[in-house]
Image (tube, rainbow, N blue to C red):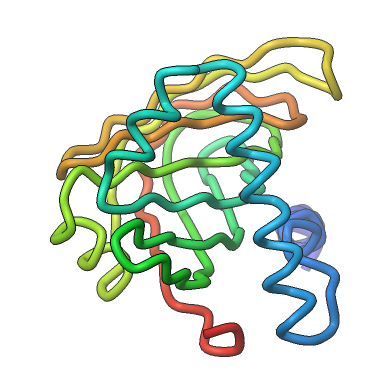
Length: 188
């Protein structure tokens, strides 16, 4: 029984940390408002660091912004979060959740934001309707508030540009991950 105690505490830590990335609003209206506010802050930060992203997003069929918390414990990696996909052609928002699991070497936790820019409508529609994405991920992050720095790289194909902005965290990892994005039925 003692051998399962560390696994229990790690799982408890992961669940507690991942639950912090969910919005705190109680009703669907408040949750959508929180997600939209997060989107606006993330886009503002992105445009500050990557000014060319503004034109890329404006000319794309659509984009997505996700808030995500990632935990990496030796050989396993877990993430959870939520976000919104904007169809630039119609102005429609689709609210989504995401979960991720992976294997590889690493240790740490980080709170980050991801922006997906879809280069064609078919890729955006597949993302919204099917949601799976697989990739190889390697990064290093050491950041608290405005101090520190982060380097991230995501190897993904399929007509998307992905930006990652680290909010806070300390992590060093190299993992192979499977990510699932799905519609949030309570918000759409």
